[in-house]
Length: 136
Image (cartoon, rainbow, N blue to C red; front, side, top):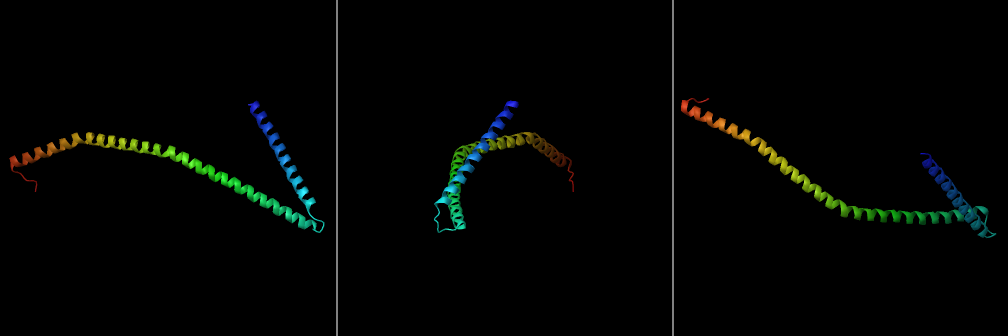
């Protein structure tokens, strides 16, 4: 259990280090772009232009990530379709076989009762015919 905690702690440090490095890179890019601005530009104009550049980069990055997610979902759908459809056919056949078995069992269980009821009705009808009594 302690080893798992040590691994988690190590990953937290690596994540914090990665975030720090990415933050330093972003600040460095911001500073570099700010210094590239001309002397005729006001500081707010420089910052505005830098923010526009970052937003364009972010839009490009988000578009690439969403395209990757869409491609992954498309691949997943194709793979699942190739595996799910045969599985559904197999399940459908199993259900059909079970229904057939159930219908057969139902018919076989009820058949003696129906036969007996038919025999009783036949004997009653014969008894009425012999005795001449009518139920009405």
